[in-house]
Image (cartoon, rainbow, N blue to C red):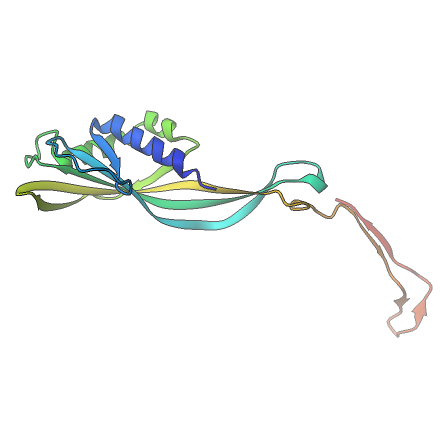
Length: 192
């Protein structure tokens, strides 16, 4: 299973720390609050499998093995920054906030902070759009981060990780090329 709760908690905390701006998840219901301060909305979308899942064995005892099916997954973490500030030179402008954030996401400390949770593979160009909210012009910029994580699913059904340890092969009868029976019998004992 993908640990979405940890990913969401870490992503929100990271964006808040690096931007200094209030961060909310777009899919969480909250009451509206009128505020002059900029805000960033987060959203996860476009979950895609990458490659072929693989089985990883967790225990050395064949009958009681647990199999962990691990698969790479790619998802998009979308950030939408909004601000009433229309001056791009101001640090409170939505575009400036996202550009600063893009730079800070490339820091080694950021990469280390995300280790074992998810990684940011690529950040796309930010896009601009404006709209009016209650008669006030809102500057809004979006930024998509292409991220990767692992989907782990443990299979603990009896015999899930079982394997063939030894094969004993005995032939019933062996025939010559011309089809006549021969007294030779082939016995094989195959072990890893």
